[in-house]
Image (tube, rainbow, N blue to C red; front, side, top):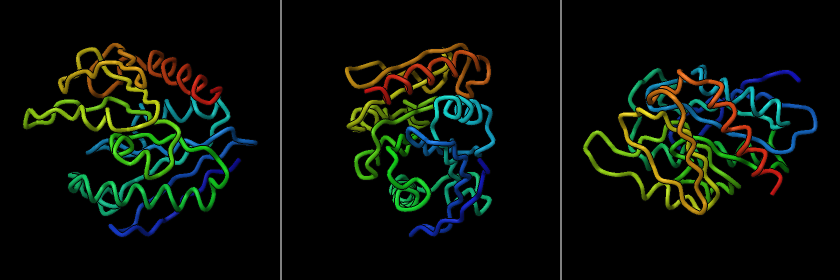
Length: 196
């Protein structure tokens, strides 16, 4: 099917969703970029390929601050508001009637509000530059979570729990060193999530 790009107005500015639909989708993955990155990051494109193969439509989302060309994200409440608005609009439009898997750090904080059935975190920054832990964001997701983390990630490594799978792969925070490991971890978790 043909990829399309949508401009979505949120209370925080215009977001952009790059839609990659599949025939007869089982679900949809709404996947965001890292703090200073974009939707063409190698890890996001690898996950998109895994989702395609699993029969899952994908929306790669650029937050409003990135659409404006800014590198630094705003405060978490602003990101959360924009993300929730984007997911609501996609759920009411092109992803209507599909179960949503949400992917990004912001997805942990908004999973319940956006009705996600699972959260995918690529290189979750567990320890903030200030030294504060972000463990509460992971613990508060309220849905099954997969964290794919590089073994030498300078931002730490979360622990698994009853509702959280942590896949440790070779590499650092960029997850570029072990694309096969990344794809395998996401494929296995996504398949189990959707089978349940």
